[in-house]
Amino acid sequence: MVKFKYILLLSILTLLVYSCGDDGIPGSTIDPNFDHGAQSIKDNDSLVLFLKNHYYDLSTSTVKPLETGETPLYEDPKLVTQNITENINDNDVDYKLYAYIATEGTSPKGNPTVVDSVLVNYSGQKILNTTTISTATFDSNVNTWFVLGGGVIRGWTYGITNLLGGVNNTMANEPLSFSGTGKGVLFLPSGLAYRNVGTGQTILPNEILMFYVELNDIIVDTDSDLDGVPSILEDLDKDGKPWNDDTDEDGTPNFLDTDDDGDLILSIREDANEDGNPANDFSDLDNTSLPDYLNKVIRKSNR
Ligand SMILES: [Ca+2]
Ligand SMILES: [Ca+2]
Ligand SMILES: [Ca+2]
Ligand SMILES: [Ca+2]
Image 1: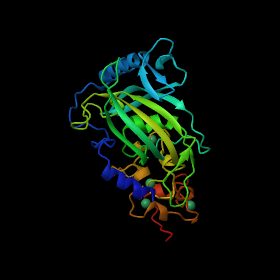
Image 2: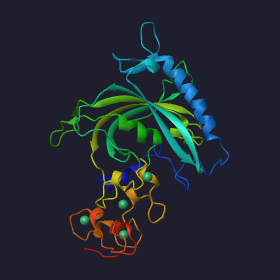
Image 3: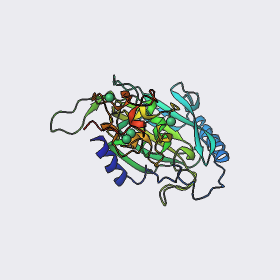
Image 4: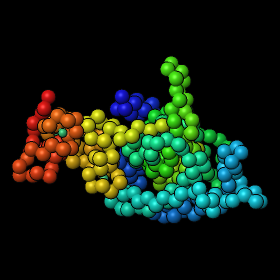
């Protein structure tokens, strides 16, 4: 089900999904000499000024130019700053992402991980200068599923983990309905959006963006490749980035790879004790810490 949705989304969504270079980084093949670090600093300077010149208006749930008596976003305790390091062309680039948590969600499911499936309403606007907001919404949608680490812009991957979802009140055969949803605004440097590439005519290279996001629901422990190992547990080096773990080096990260060790036996079938979890089966007496599904030497299928 989740896998199906993932594939469907990849084929439909053109805006929030970028095309990846061989290292998974959009634009890396377009201009290998582009200075991503300098762009990150420039974008952050703009974002900070923007956040100092705007506030969140509770009555309209929108970001507005600062007025007397209002608290600038930059000084608002509801603003979260995330430091994120992305590896681009073998160089680490530091970014700052700002997430304004307007309304805490009420879901007991907790925050989504960077690779969980999320159901969101959203709208995106450009930050074209630091004192005003583009009134044009370039993209919006309601009740749309995304896999956070699986193809959305990185600003979403990280930013939406700050939100909690709501409670599903949907009745049988009725439209989706949620209450107590989490609402926030993401402020993204271009490096965590469409980088120095843009999306063609809609987003130009190096544009900084803001997204209103409402998190309706999440799938806890999303298993995008349905191999029995939750996506977040396929982050083998535990660096918080499941997209850089690729045991068989076939270009598909483990959390999207149905045969993680490339031995032509599906991971879900390398489940010797048949408990549905391939991560707790260790048949190699010479390597007792490596589970069968990551061990090319072991090619036992339990089905
Ligand atoms: Ca990793
Ligand atoms: Ca896998
Ligand atoms: Ca395998
Ligand atoms: Ca097992």
